[in-house]
Amino acid sequence: MRQKNSTESDTQCLKDFFEAPITFPPTYKYVLNSDAYQIEKDEEVRRPSYTDRILISTFSNDLEIIQYSSIDDVKLSDHRPVFADMILHQRSKNNEMSKNTSTEKTRTTTNHIKTIVKQHILTFLMTIATMTFVCILIFLVMCQLIIKCQTQKTDMQQTAQINIVGTPSSVES
Image 1 (cartoon, rainbow, N blue to C red):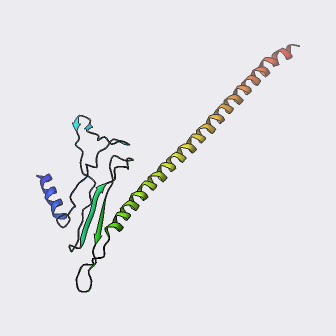
Image 2: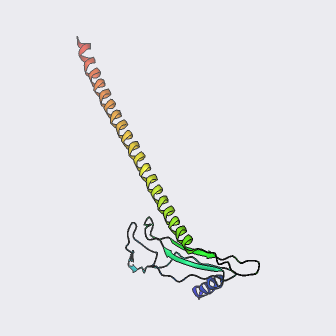
């Protein structure tokens, strides 16, 4: 009963929103760095789903959706990001829609957005690689310090043994 009320409440909250037709595969839940879906969780079967959505609310019909899709190249998460290309037509003072929208410009913008996403992924991966390299260097320096300390400790123990062993024999003479 509570679940039903929650669903009805959610529907009421979203009643002024719409979504473009979905023409892409489910965006969740992928195995990391893979195109395969994670279909098992413990003993229950998990179905791929559309958890990543773009819901739109507008006061007029001046919005044209050019493309609504996912970016399958981004595999750093168990989700795939989604995007929407839209044109919001401007109305003139006479309340007429402007006809000067360019689909080619929208395609260029889409390609530009995809390029930016890929560049940020490369930047992110380079940052991780740099941090990993720094951690390895720190680890190697720590190993050298430990070895140096162990060597000094061994030298000090040998010196102490020589002094201890050498003391009684010099007392006897």
